[in-house]
Each structure stands twice: as structure tokens, then as C-alpha cells.
Image (tube, rainbow, N blue to C red; front, side):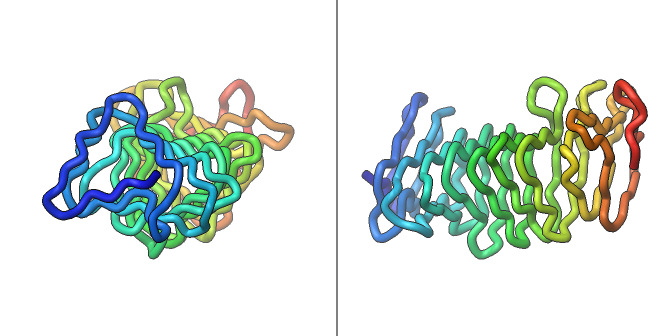
Length: 232
């Protein structure tokens, strides 16, 4: 079913998985009380309606997964996900340009649309068949995926005339792979000792780094020599 937490109500979530299978008037999760994530996963599998809605009312999710193809889901307020966001299938958006903050990895096999929201990810992985339609504002990347990538694109990255800002300072492991898709504005702002190298890793046939508007290096170094010299 769906989950509605009324004012004064509390859901102390399982540390396992809370699965949402349907909706109530398009709401899959409607929180007006207290949602305590307990380091658990919320997994939406509803496939009955488009524009399904999630309202967290200032409380955080820990992990959120959507397996909702061919349906769409949107957030109704500024939303924080304390660990990972996984879009296995379906469409997920920031609705009426709500802010979205994900501390961990964002993994996209479906479609994620950012509108003009303020967006912050720990890292971004776009799998084959996945699409990130970036915010026309700023997507900030603050860390990596646990191996080496700030951004690993094996699908489609649509820049939407927005800015990507890299602030990750993970030592010697700040790399991005765009697979011939373009940035619009790219800002490198990676400070701190030996952790300030952001490498454009060219894994596909076209290893060029494309920036359609402005490239700004505020702090740190943009290293274009991962394995071989990559064109800019």
C-alpha cells in the first residue's frame, strides 16, 4: 500500500526495507508527522499512476529506490537522502523545483530530471539506458562512488544549460567519465593536499571533454592525462 503519517504520528522505519506498492490519491509517502529512517530503505514499486508524490516535511530518508516503470514520481518539498538514491526504472523528478540532496551515490537506470532545482549528490552513476536531465541551476558533486568516480556516465547526461560543480576531495580518486556527453558549465573546486586532482577519464571511443560554455578552476587541478592525453 501507501504510507501516510498524520500530524502527531510517527513511523520508526525498519532497518530493512519498507516497500510502497500503491498510492492514495497519488501519494506514495505523505509525511506530516515524524519519519525516522533507522538506516533503512524505502522502495517504491507502484506502477498505477503518473506524478506519484513523496512528501518528507523536513525529515530525511536513508536509502530510496524507485522501480516504477513506466510511471513517474516527484518530490513535493526539499528532500534529503542520507545515503543512496537508486532509480532502477521509471521517472523521478524534483517536481516544482524542490531542492534534492543525496549524501551518497545516485544511481540512474531510469530517468532523473532536475528542473531548475539546487541539487547535491555524493556521486552520480548513469547506467546504460539511464538518463540524467540536469538542473538548469547547479549540480554539486561532493564525493565519489566508493571507488574513484565522481561521475560515471554510461547512459545519457543532458546538461540543460546548467552547471556542474566538483567539490570532492577524496585523495587521488576524483574522476569523471562523460562518454562524449557535454557539460554546459563545469567548475572544479576541489581543495586539500593531494586530493585536488579531478581527472577526465575517457573510456569510450570519443575521449574528449566537452564543455559548451564555461570551464572554471576555482581550486585544485584538472588533470587531462589519465592513461593518455585526452582532448578538451
